[in-house]
Amino acid sequence: MALAARRLSEADLAGCLALSAEAGWNQTAADWRAVFAAGEVRGLEREGRLIASAAVLPWPAGPFGWVCMVLVSAAERRQGHATRLLDWAVARLEAMGRTAGLDATPAGRAVYLRRGFADVYALTRLRAEAPGRVALPAGAPLPRPMTAADLGPVAAFDAPVFGADRSGLLAALRARQPGLAFVAGKAGAPAGFVLGREGRTATQIGPVIARDEAVATALIAAALGGCAGSVLLDLPDRHEGLGRALAGAGFVAERPFMRMLAGRAEPLDRPGQVFAVTGPEFG
Image (cartoon, rainbow, N blue to C red; front, side, top):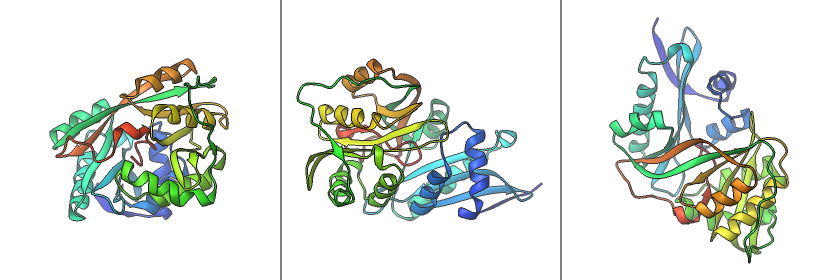
């Protein structure tokens, strides 16, 4: 039975959600809508049923775009569908003049290395079922709730660290979960910020962008105060001190990821100031 490939839209949301839920991923309808808003989603159909997907997010004012939501239904795996969609995603970003980036699982990393991607830095997904108190280092600031007036300065602080303009995503995340949005520093001059979002199985904390680990720790502690139930956080491995603080609050490693770029091993972000990524969907 022949496959049909086409661009997907929000009208295909139910099929997209079925794919991510079958894989055990954490995405909600709001996450898929954010992907549709920020980029382009392509799907493969068999007899009118969505059996695979991939998306590209060509972040504005930056040299890269993100590859995400590469999903194949269980009954259709090992038939080359993911490779076909990955090739489309990389070619699509190349046509826009952007380097393709992604966060790979160990199994995916082996595939991506063969297709010209290079390791940039390692991350670990941490999970806590009911996080305890995070011990704050000396000199940690007192974050305050992020307001609408903070969004402009926060986006300006974020762009050179992330490597592109994702102001639309930051605003959408704050609108979704204002109780998880905090900023540290003076008004108009942030020293860091945290955002979070509800998930299918757990709250996701991230991004966390900060000038140093003390600021990042205080921001995460503030966001955790608004969480109930399971919490996820994707932490770059380089931040060992923060990792120990989170372990003390009950976080344990769930799975590793590798941040990768097509044809480039040097980061396009500033890893020293990235204390939690938004998630593999968004970079």
